[in-house]
Length: 90
Image (cartoon, rainbow, N blue to C red; front, side):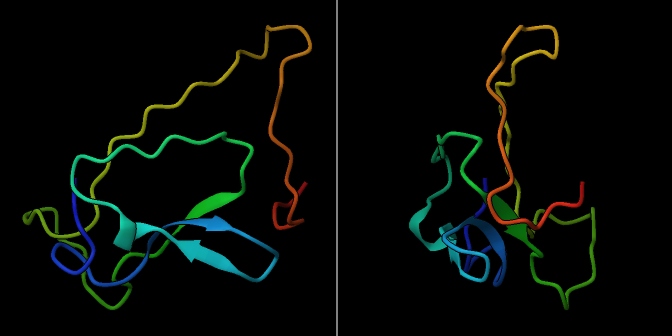
């Protein structure tokens, strides 16, 4: 729903390749693209334009629609993600 370089300048969605390296994929995306991946792949969102003041009165910034598929806690032996980076507190 937004594009880096036009709606925002810095930050956004990334995949983690190691404990210290992220691959930001925002420059590879166009408005309307879908990113489909296994939720167990370590990923995150870097702060978008951290020096800019947030304003809900403008359409600037990074907008997205997240459609998630998660198994219920009631599914026996469900598959869940594991933190491979050690970055999540237990």
